[in-house]
Length: 502
Image (cartoon, rainbow, N blue to C red; front, side, top):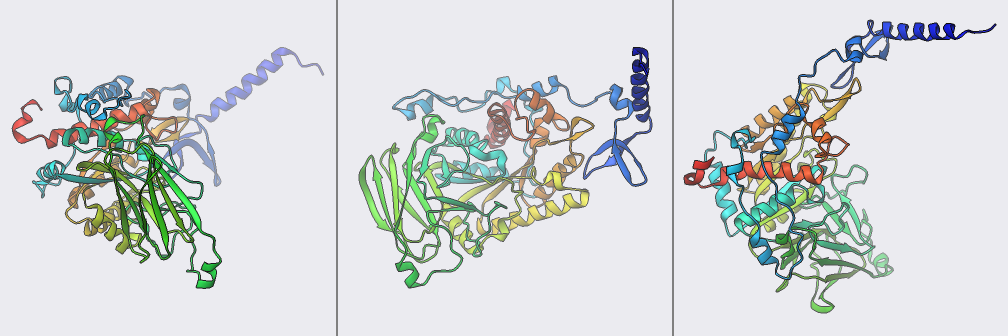
């Protein structure tokens, strides 16, 4: 039988007509997911995802944000650039940088401001006093949004220009992500164990310190070996090279106070410190199992400082702190995949001892994004915010007198009918986090609102301000969102008599 072209055409039209007709059987939001609803229909327990005719033909008007709305947000502030000029005098270079926002070019009415607890009217004054004090350490806890010193580094540079201080603060002995704040090169013997890493079995003692991760130059052993086993072990040598980075802000290129934080040291470990090949100091770490800080002080920022460790069984090394002599120090404590709910599960004694040494005056917490996809309803949101309140209280009992600021999650999207849409529960999560924080004497800044609110993430991606994972900021986007936060903070830190230009 010969099939003519007209028959083929009619068959195709018939199939297309049938497929189009099915669109009228499809229901808007007929397929229920955890938080979102796709078009589709169900028959005898079978669900089929299928567009409605209004979705397919684009008949529904998009009343969300426009590109122009996002451009207005991103043009509120003008971020600073990294000082890439190479000079022997980083102090002079840092002094050339403009320190304060130019409010003649900023529409402060469009700026998303920080919310403060109403029952604590002195909150802003206390922040100002702490930041203006001789030394102010800030712990910035967050998820992967701050990895590689993103956001933290920009804020640190801004505040160090404003209040003094230098150095990049905390850096793990074994960094697992790219960072340019300082040169830290560990030897090949090092291994990392993070309390927040779900792929690694946790230490039974849970002694992870204030930075919630440790590095070791020998494998962690559950049971302490006996003397015969120790005698048979070889001496392991491990090294850490430290220097300043020429790719970072000039302020970070100046540090003379180096701290090596360690604990769980139960066996002899020799430490030798070399600067430009010359032996500076040589000691033994304290083998009492408790937290300690080994201090190294140099007259100028080292370009080739080398720490060598020798021992049969490694201690737990919580990380390095690279600081100037005074002023602002901000530690970037990035916890990939974390939601900010694990602090109270760590060893309280070790955490407390380390915090007493670090003496943080401000704690910034930045979480919420990683828990968003797993929230099914408002009850889940309420439970999560209560857990956050519990974590804040746990940290506050150990970091006594510290002020707390919480930075909420960004806008986040999920695919719905082939388009990226804001998670339906995200606005409620943002408002509930704000409510919970303010009730617990924690200031709150909504990054979700600062980006532009519902639907803003897709437009930030289009403008190359966030990556195509619809989650993490690009370097350009990082600077903008960081400057938006800093400018909001600066407006609150200004002396009252200087507020006439706001």
